[in-house]
Length: 251
Ligand SMILES: Nc1ncnc2c1ncn2[C@@H]1O[C@H](COP(=O)(O)OP(=O)(O)OP(=O)(O)O)[C@@H](O)[C@H]1O
Ligand SMILES: [Mg+2]
Image (cartoon, rainbow, N blue to C red; front, side):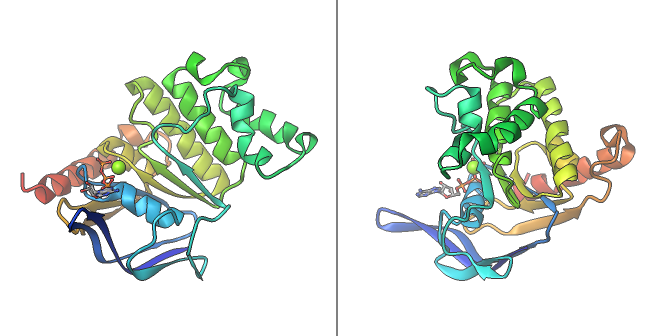
């Protein structure tokens, strides 16, 4: 579905350049759940911006469904860490925002919006404003808004990192369900090794350094199996990811 071929990307900083990617290539298959993990500053968010078409590579090319990506596309959903909610709109209005900016009449989206709001467990708070919501609820509103647009690609930048442990696990399960039900192609950035192994059908470990490179690629075929988190295979996978990360940081 996605083909990143020999991409370069550098940020200009005054007179100097920060080279984040140099001759970087990556493929993502349809229906995959790819997780990116790596030290702070290695270039994970940058890669999501490239895949979203918000940044253009300075060399190489990115293709989505075999078409060259030259800007953003409607079928790509992007969830940022700061939720991106509008404080003056309530839950229902925030969730339907994407549809309203597409000038869809209310009677056409009302049912779909209500269904997503119920599925995300937001029914009781649908008239609340973001300031009246918990972090987990805000995150679910952001997710609901993206899902109403039926994306074929979902990009998420540390979507759960601001949440407490239990809420985070609950939302991890929700993400897993959505991915399994909708066969959505997803690319998720996280700092949590556990989360990477719980959610990723494939995990890419990126190295510190300018430019970055892939230190390891872990296939995770048991992802989504019930009770996976409690198995010895899960533990082995997390240990392996941890050893790669530690090696990559020279620790
Ligand atoms: N707009 C910018 N101008 C200059 N340098 C930038 C810019 N954005 C990012 N960088 C640099 O590019 C590198 C990669 O940044 P990026 O945000 O992709 O990292 P990250 O892996 O997402 O980090 P974190 O885990 O902390 O979110 C960093 O060294 C950062 O300082
Ligand atoms: Mg980042």
